[in-house]
Structures are given as structure tokens and as C-alpha cells.
Length: 63
Length: 143
Image 1: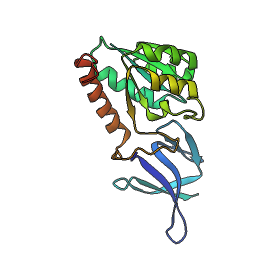
Image 2: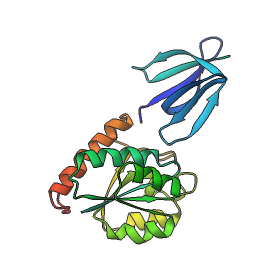
Image 3: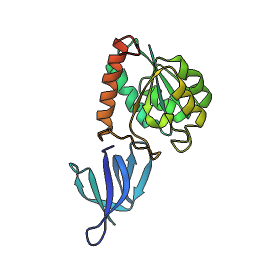
């Protein structure tokens, strides 16, 4: 599969994979809701820092 | 010509498949939605399936009574989809004489070697093209 994956960017630039095969991203007041292609949903208290779509990567940072 | 679309959990993949098949295939081709749960069946029915049935017994009953079965590869993996694909469901689909057209996506830890990773919409486009060829060829084994 080659949908986008979501990563938290840690100090030092390390990427921590937190959610795979992202289908939808829905902004909410308390963060963002992500849903994968299988229908699994997860809320992250985070905002999008960067989307590198050619690389299929979504970088998040905690709020 | 009857094609069964099998899915579980929220039915998202089955819904996408059904929408595409309904767009691409002749209206005379019947799409049978087989969900491991009611939510999945409803999602596929809303997407344009002609009929729907839910649960292990429905899948076991219908698997040998269609010309083709489609879904993700998880539908032939026992205990896939958080356990919704029971061993009996997986066995019934695998043993069905219908041709199986499966997408190489699953969360069951199964990797299919030789498959180039593609986004889901591309996989579904390829599936629709293949099924169209299969239908137009009269569902023969050599098509």
C-alpha cells in the first residue's frame, strides 16, 4: 500500500510513525481526526506541521 | 453475471469497490454485497449494490453461487478484520469455484511479494478493468 502515513516529529528530527494508510484528515478544535482506508479512526492532539505528499508523509506536532 | 463484494468492519473498501464497479460494469451485472456485519453491508448497498446479505452463514451460502468474488485479500485470511473474517468465511470464499479478484491490502501481517505498492484508488481502477474484461469474456476460466 502506498497511502500517506502520519508521523510525529520528535526533537532532533526523528520521525515516529503514529498512523498508517491515511484516508481522511478532519480538523477539530481539540486536534485532528484521522481515518485510515480500513475505517479505523484516531484523534491526535496535534496540528499538521508539514505534508510531504510525494513522499506520502504527514508530519504532526503536539499542541 | 453476479459479482460478490465482500467486506467487513465499516465497509469502506467494499463501498469504494462497489461505486467503481457500478460505474464501469454493464448495468445487467448484479453486485451482491456480502458484509461480515450489517454496517458493511449497508455501506455497500448505499454505494449501488443490487442486493445485500450479512454474516457468516450468508457468505458461506452465497460464495459458491456467484461468478466472481472481490474484496481485499483479508477475506481469505482467517481472523482478519479484527476477527470478523471467521475461519469458515475464509474457507468458503477460498473454496468457492468463483474466480477471486483480491486487492493486496490487509492488516493481517500478510505481505504479497511482487506487488508494487499503489494507492487504493489505483488498485480499485485496476480491479474494475480486470472485472470488465472478465465479464465481457463470459466469466470463463481462461479470460
